[in-house]
Image 1 (spheres, one colour):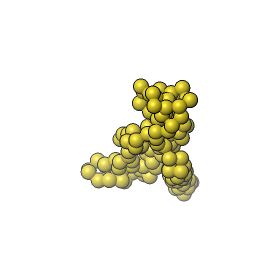
Image 2: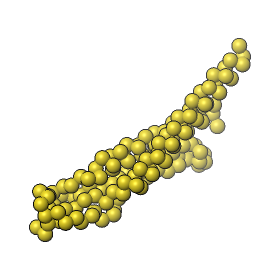
Image 3: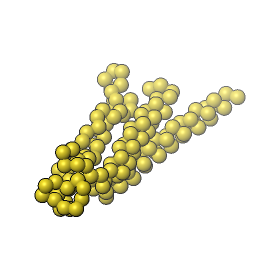
Length: 135
């Protein structure tokens, strides 16, 4: 393990957390997005991440986002015949985005980001202190 590996690993975690935060923000922003009946309704995105395998097949080299998947939950069919995007039967398809789940995930992603940044800062302070020892 190199001298700066802890910073590199934490940086991959921070990058993954940033992607997750962006995806969650987009999901929340589109919670009420309605599209015409001939278009696919908005589907929440899911972040898929995995461990980065080290040089000798070992783990512990960080994490990376491998995919952004569409949530396969069926959209909500809401009766609203006056809506401009209602189908012939008066139904509108709304995204099946659960705000409580998105907000819970948002808190987890935010804490993950904060902790990874804290690891980077602590590592930097440790390296600075080590450099001062020889002075």
